[in-house]
Image 1 (tube, protein in one colour):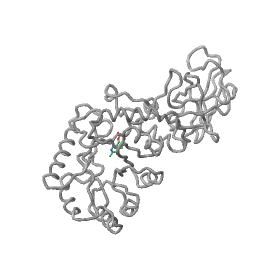
Image 2 (cartoon, rainbow, N blue to C red):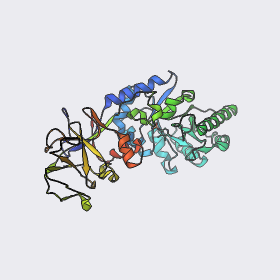
Image 3 (cartoon, helix red, strand yellow):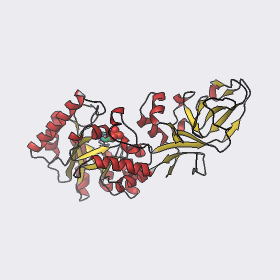
Image 4 (tube, protein in one colour):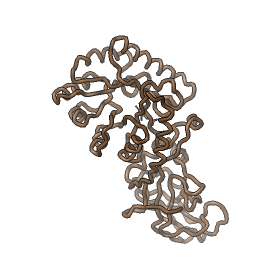
Length: 386
Ligand SMILES: *Cc1c(COP(=O)(O)O)cnc(C)c1O
């Protein structure tokens, strides 16, 4: 590993490559026509990458708007000085309406009660609250049912404190090729938008594509695309790989804080689930655990990289630490060219020389998706921006 900056207070960190984030954002921007806006999804602290620095980098690379999941996430962006439009991707509790108006956050709207409370809050502050109408076209998650779209708008549109700034839906299967359910959702969305227009109602910006939709379905970019995972350099599915080149933005690294040569038969970690099988095995400790997002089900399954060589993680992953083993005398794989030392850099996620531990590899071992792997690493580790 060449030069590495590590935090002073703990030898473990998330490295966020903002240059890669910029290039990924530009790659998506190039996919969109000039008149299509790019909404960058920075929910869950930008999928674990840090929402504020990521949003600034994305904006400089062509992002027009941002989306978050919660009111708190939106407020945090505003308090950090982010002034661009921010959409909250679901309808928050009605008690938030004053906060939404105060911080100029656009919620997704799909109930009349919420919309009218928002309108009241805005009117009493002499403002107009902008919102995006969410339509459920088949995912059965959030949004007004497609049959009730017009009625909802007719119930709330009289309010002078409300302005519809967008109309959107979300696809359940945009990452599946030639999917009938996708076509069905898109059809229902088109019909709803046409019905709104036919009724003389303003839709604002029409949008539906997430990352896989943006890449695979340019026919429904409409006025805006909501891009998330791809910006962070991860593919939502294998089908997008041939269509766009992306660079992973996150790496997770730590340093060795202790090395020992235990006796043959000594056990490692809680439950002593791994035992030293022979002489001349090093066991090294790294200060990253499941409270940092390194899921415990990876115990005795995952590899880490030292000097670009894979080493086996051993023993149960603890809350704040894990251990890995190096067979010093092995002539074969799973052994760096030298014994491991105090202070050595260990790569848990990302590249070291020609070797890489990908979020997909880790997701496979955990029976989950790359999205969850990077989100999890956002929970406690210090972030270093490069
Ligand atoms: C998370 C989310 C997105 C972004 O999805 P990606 O697959 O990460 O691109 C877009 N729209 C909505 C409504 C979302 O919840």
